[in-house]
Every structure is written in C-alpha cells, then in structure tokens.
Image (cartoon, rainbow, N blue to C red; front, side):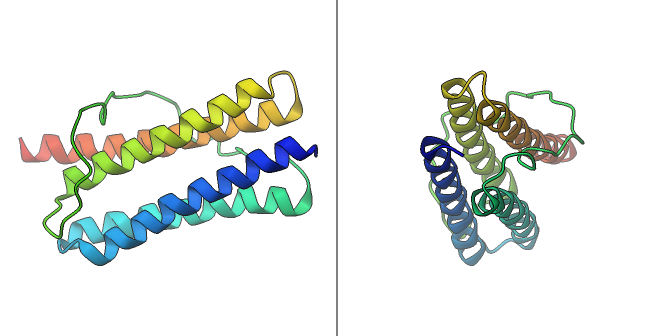
Length: 153
C-alpha cells in the first residue's frame, strides 16, 4: 500500500478510537439503563470496525475493508438537527442516539472524502466500502431512534 493510503487508514483508526473513547465516557456518565445498553452495543460495533481497519494496516491489504454487505441504505434524516452535544447523567436514549448518529455521519463523510481522494484505485474502492459500512451503522442507529420515538408518541 502506498504511504498516503496507510496515513489515511491510520487517521481513520484514530477517528474511530476517538468515537470509541467518547462512547466509553458516555457509558460512565449516563444513568439510564436502556441508554447504557445501547452505548454498549455502539462500543462493540466501533471496536469491531476499528479492528478491521487496524488489520488492514497490519497486513498491508485492503480487500477485507468494508465487506459488511448486510444492509440496505436509507437515510432517515435523523440527527440533522442543531441539538448541542451536552453530555450529562440525565442524557436520555433519544439524545444519546442523536449524538451517535452525528458521530457516524462525520465518519461517513471522512471515508467518502478519502474515497474521492483515491478515486479509481483499490484504496478508493476500499474507502467507499468503509463509507457504506458506516452508513449502515448510522442507518441502524436511526432505525432504533425511529422505533423509540414512535413507541413514545
């Protein structure tokens, strides 16, 4: 792999770690049990995703990146609101999910920008697959959010 691809993957792993750190801090702060369970699921998803990126760096290969083909994309538009990311122990499930959606959206945009930067190469295709996987993570969180909002209304 060329050096710029490795740098981009290292940056991706770093960004995933920052989100993972954020979720782990949320787990310590949030009091609501249902929120804690959702955070634990988000942490596990992030750990697996970061692990795939780190393995690609380690093996100097791109073929296993972004191979989660189990989802069909449909952006529900949830998370595009201007809610501030104020984290307190009273954070409810809906607020937590909105924060998670925004984190996934930022990751997706990063991978899309890297896909564009390396367009027409194996790396570009790998980054596009990563963007697709993150979009699937975001979609899953949006559906959880949608289900919770519909249950409460």
